[in-house]
Amino acid sequence: MLNDPLRPPNSSARLAGLLFIILGSLALFAGLSFLAYGAAVPTLQNDPVMKQQLEDLRRQTTVDLQLSDLQVIAYVAGALFAAYGLAAIVVGLFIRASNRVASILGIVLAGGVVLLLGLCSLSLLLKGGAIPQFVVVMGLM
Image (cartoon, rainbow, N blue to C red; front, side, top):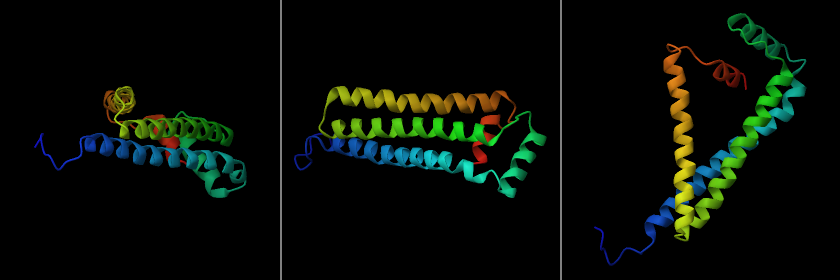
């Protein structure tokens, strides 16, 4: 019902903004988790389980990773997730206020994520179902 007199005029924008705030908060939490993992990597240097996992990875793939490489990957992933999360939260706040520019920016943010996921899925299909090496690396975290 488009012309429901009991429905507030901007309730769709409020719900879309709330969705962006929630998803942004989750992305921000994931980014902070990656950053915390990156900070904890130096403590794993003497961990026998981590050494065994790295050796298994070296045997199974052509990836030759050191713990410092995992730390860099964690920091980069954390920074990207945190930046996206903060952007989504800010855009969500403006979307809730029915700001048209923020709505367009939200479409661009969401479209970028969908495009990135689509490209990752396409690369997975083109490799014949083989798991890309970056997924193997992220599985160590």
